[in-house]
Image 1 (cartoon, rainbow, N blue to C red):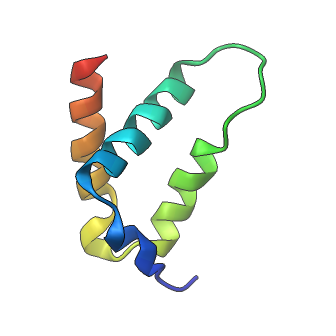
Image 2: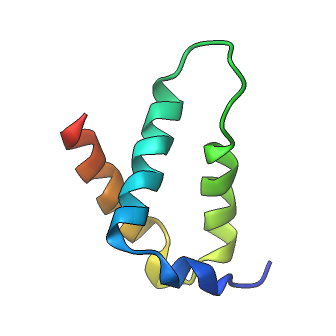
Amino acid sequence: MPIDERWQQLRDSDWDELARSWLAGLEDTSEAPRSGIGLTVVLMNFTTPPELDFCRFGIQMWRASLVQ
């Protein structure tokens, strides 16, 4: 898959929202349809430049977990 340049346009608040949504999806044990955030995170693995991958997302996840 090619690198998607849109990842580089995300602001810190966008990364925070992505992390919060992903964490909420992990905690959701209901049978309700999933939001698709898991697929977004999987695609991020293949379409982000290396410098933006889990290093930046990991920081945002950690920050989001502190707020919850």
